[in-house]
Image (tube, rainbow, N blue to C red; front, side, top):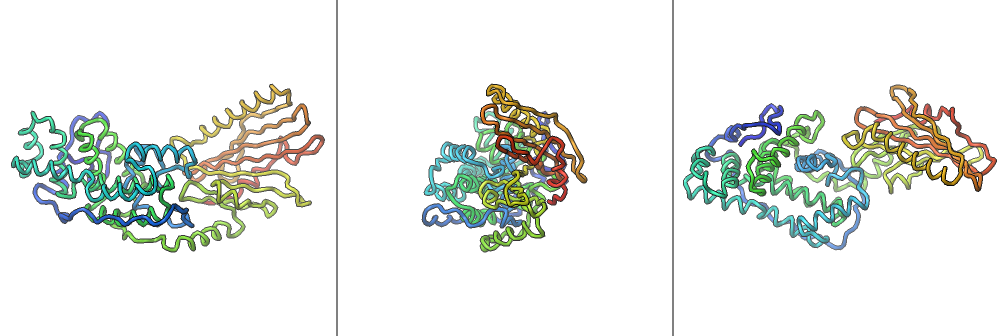
Length: 460
């Protein structure tokens, strides 16, 4: 059954009662695609794991985007980052890496580096394509391939394997021998992305292994909608369901939402020339780092692919080591005597269902409540303001300030938390903190106009 219309308008809701036949894709009979065989096996990995000398942001070409787009339905369905290889938001962390490792172990029996190529080779040379071809052969033996899917299923309505017969008939009518390729090859690319995030393979190895698979996938279909159609049909076949069942419909919904995104994954042209664009990745990284700090700007990373930049006065010293290691931007504000006055930290996240200005404010207020409770328990003098807003150019800055003086030592600190939406795409979060010993005067105060400096020159 056809799931996607050529004009890419939404074609399904979860309560849709009927669907149109897939034969409109290519008509009955032999599909127009070549009847190729499965691709050759990938070569073995050499040596032990070693981190690549570059990151995705350094080599994020249309080829790399194309690879991510190939498993975008999976990424969207699991609420992951559409632009990142492996779909992990903001370079994951240990918790996310352990979760991915568990998934690879439980779902694919991948426990370490040695298992990666073996599992992926099984997917691209056999996968569920082998089972699909067996079912197609049974349909042929029953003389049903020349009938429409509806006519064929009417003759098999009492067969317990009816869902798989229906899926296979629909896929074969549209794509012939390649009917399951979207399912097998997209999953192979997804698994490689997961193995990269699990640090079983590095980024360069992931891209090297992914490239021939992406090329084979591209040659098997004519458009993103055909890839998605094969992928979701393959999912239904794997689950022994039909496209009318709930889980396939969820994935259809995911596809249609992706297809409607102006700058979504399918904005990468399907016929993109797929080629190695990361061979000089180390050089590109050095060029990227130079570019990010040109003209006095300091970089603020957002996820695996984007960078915002802030320009500050020269007395703000960029701590490059934190940026490279933690994906955050730290600066120290130096005073006239070359001593640190206070610290500034920026982070940027994509605006989505999990990251919004309202959610950031809620998290900050929860943290403040916890700090307040600890301070009161210790007998400290703790003050906190209300959430306020101010305008800095085109940006509306929300902020809240807190201050504490410790009862025992007299040590004191003042801290601002601020956040703003940038470009309709990013949430930029900034914190400013200053500490001092007893009887020292703090540089910051309740009426500080610090944000006129920290947010006045942002580009993205």
